Length: 285
Image 1 (cartoon, rainbow, N blue to C red):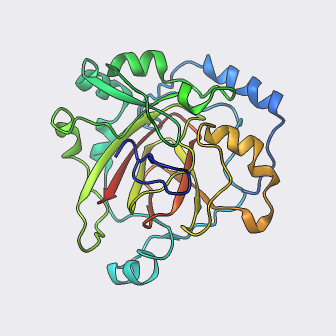
Image 2 (cartoon, rainbow, N blue to C red):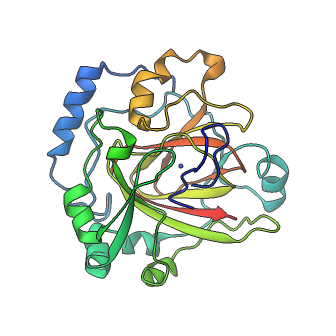
């Protein structure tokens, strides 16, 4: 598995991540250009020192169409969601310690010299680039250029060395609901505002935001979305999404820090980081 991305044809992809009006393309480009030169955030308590997103360049959806549950039991999870539809879980785990360890300052101090593997932010994610984590954070972690293609965008997610990062992962508490016959596997990521992964699908799993916000777009397995595998989610949101009739709109919602999205097996999904975001997925393989 590569960052949750898929491999194979667009319609047979396997194992690889609003009705609001969009701003005009020229305004969108200008706003992301301004965001690209913004100074890193300094609020350890709020954003962990990670750079905030652009000033309103990409908004949250007008209405979240994925249910949020703060009181879900395991029986309800299995009966109502596990094999049927996504759900956002709230308050089931306390990852405040893990969150503190994921601040920009602490991650650079602990892992700055470690080599990480980056993948291209397209559906198939063929290209890989290895470089020190500090170099990625200080030189490549910036807002997405709306004109770039997915294979020109490097994304840190999924190719984690579990031995080297074990000291961090052992502090993470995954969602408590498992599925019979599956075992959890973590994928940790950090990505700039406006970045994301185009539509793809794989097995079931969870995704938790540690810092930032991540907007999700989801379709059931039988409803293949209209997308180009090498165009970014930002480009899809700008060019394709506004023209979709209501019947062709995806389920969508923005996941905030501390929330966990569950997605069932083979559901199509695309992601868009609205801020510089730190996140971790638990794949049930």
